[in-house]
Image (cartoon, rainbow, N blue to C red):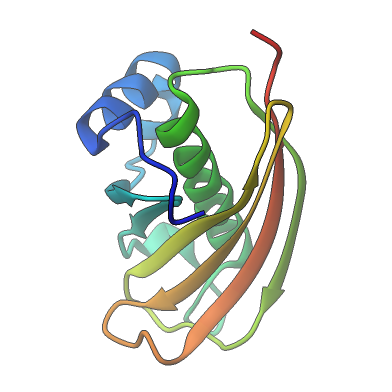
Amino acid sequence: MADLVPVMSVGELEAFMEREFPQMRMGADTTRIEAVGPGTAVLRLGFSERNLRPGGTISGPAMMALADYAMYAAVLAHIGPVGLAVTTNLSINFLRKPGPADIIGEARLLKLGRALAVGEIAMWQDGAEDAPVAHAVSTYSIPPK
């Protein structure tokens, strides 16, 4: 999918999310879109105490939210601002116990069709790209035009 060209920039995606989903920023959400590229989107889940679970690890729900948001950003970056594109499947494997640090999620589109988008999301702690903490696969439904 390296031949895909994004139709939305990081700034346009962030503005869309702020306009359409302002509730995401409630409660000091620290997830930000860092980059979009051919078939990809990179997001950062900034470290926050609220995302820790007992034992000092980043919680599974926080990483699942990062995976879902990264895939949504990748899809929208390539189809435009379609608010009704929705997750139809998300499967995640937790690979390592992430400590209290930022988590980076990179979504990569595997298929982008008229009705469905399929992708994978690799997640790692900032500075530790060689040791993924989680891997997810996701499918999005794209509404008809």
